[in-house]
Length: 179
Image 1 (tube, rainbow, N blue to C red):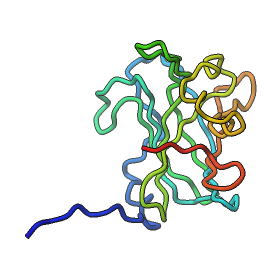
Image 2 (cartoon, helix red, strand yellow):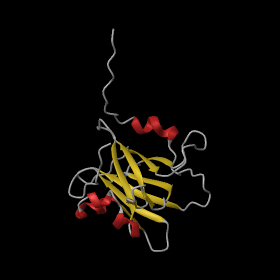
Image 3 (tube, rainbow, N blue to C red):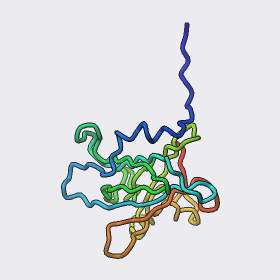
Image 4 (cartoon, helix red, strand yellow):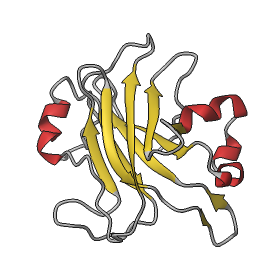
């Protein structure tokens, strides 16, 4: 008897509950001097309504592969509350260049796991106002009118708190990437 791989399945409303023991809303990092920032936001559906049971994973490029026990460095996972809100404390990466000289602005890769989806959604969150944003190899491929969906904006000039929304559909739909 041969066995075929199981296809992806919708996750149902219990997905976020099953991952609750594995939430880590503060990113671990080996460098104690790394700049930490808070990203607060909401996940909204196509009608602008909050998504109360999404799970978001934040990954930081350049993190060391080992970690502090169960979690790798450069990783955070948070769930949304009844109003679709989430909050994570992450390490703000430095701008970097590929060996071929292509530039990357400070950003985090974000995976969104939501009820009713067969696969996760992948996007990025960049930090508004970074000079390196103009040279970012990925941002340059996105139409200028859509780029703003990827930017977290500082709450004020003297804070390390950023606001960002993930919109699943509609006029201001967040840019999502093929995994």
